[in-house]
Image (tube, rainbow, N blue to C red; front, side, top):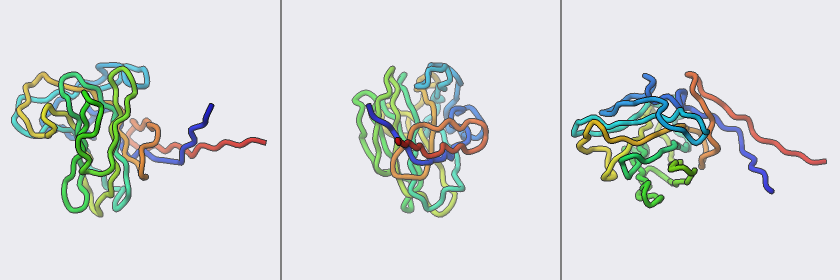
Length: 195
């Protein structure tokens, strides 16, 4: 056997499982909560549906506390209609994106930073990107697309599923820390000993 011992970490996202909450800004998408079973075995994953607009389609919030830090942004995603999942934020003076192919299970682009996709079974993937945040308030954004671009012609019905967003200090994603009560949540460091 083996032990997974993790450092202390804090999920800065305060509504990590409620994308329908006003905490998250919806740009040309609608959110239907609790539509399918998430990786934790509960029916609490949200359906993110594109509106019939020709524009960017994404969900985001503004981060104001973790400035000029090495961060890792991750979210669980599941394909229904859209092949690509996208993460975007502001770093090194401009918006940068990482694109993930949910059909081929690979990273298409990691312009945002070091990115990876992990298979969690039952169609779920955890996508993540590590980047250095700017010194002022910045957006944390994610969405889905058929063309690996946020901007496209939505149809009002096509959608994918999402669950468990996490933004934490550090150069890799630690195990998911539920943080869904309006405040950040901290997981203490794991510790093991043997006499």
